[in-house]
Image (cartoon, rainbow, N blue to C red; front, side, top):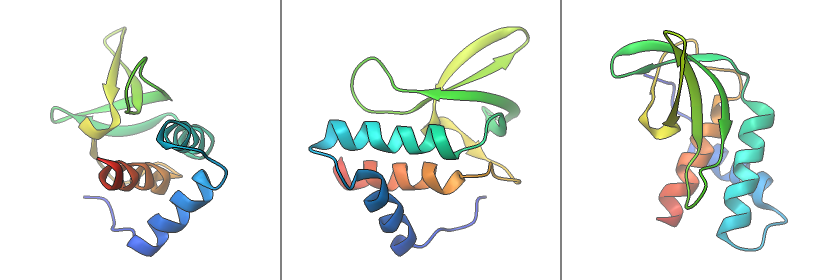
Length: 108
């Protein structure tokens, strides 16, 4: 289970990312940009109980979400970041993923 990040810290991160944004679409893109720049890949997390290495992030073609790509048995799979179970050690920059998830809750 990942360590808790305070609401105040999550709010700081969200504010830093969206400071110049107009609307939710720009905010979403800004948060993904921070994730891409600050979360060190590859990283390990669990998916359906199995620890797998995840390589990079991208935006879905439509709607909101952050997709991460993993490789398993020679095939690439795209997975929504909210489907992952986090394991220690957390990837460097993990707090940006937590900030994105807090932003989504705030805007759903």
